Picture 1 (cartoon, one colour):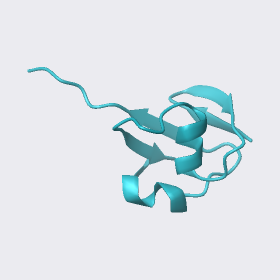
Picture 2 (cartoon, rainbow, N blue to C red):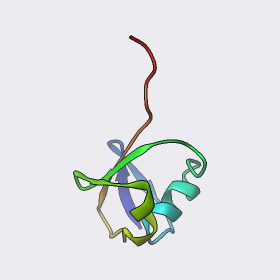
Picture 3 (cartoon, rainbow, N blue to C red):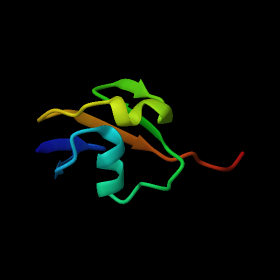
Picture 4 (tube, one colour):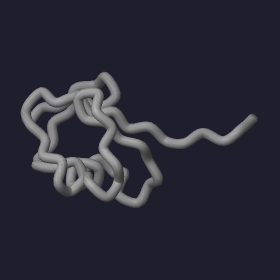
Length: 65
């Protein structure tokens, strides 16, 4: 299915957010995620189903001051 990841169209086979993150190479990363603008906590990613055209935002924490 085609989804938008951080503004870029991507083709994924995954049906849920957790599987999509693994497929995209983010399986072990510490991240914040949102689907269609709604924050998805790490513990709920496997239950967050994805659909054609969904918008996925992946944000990594930044260090600094």
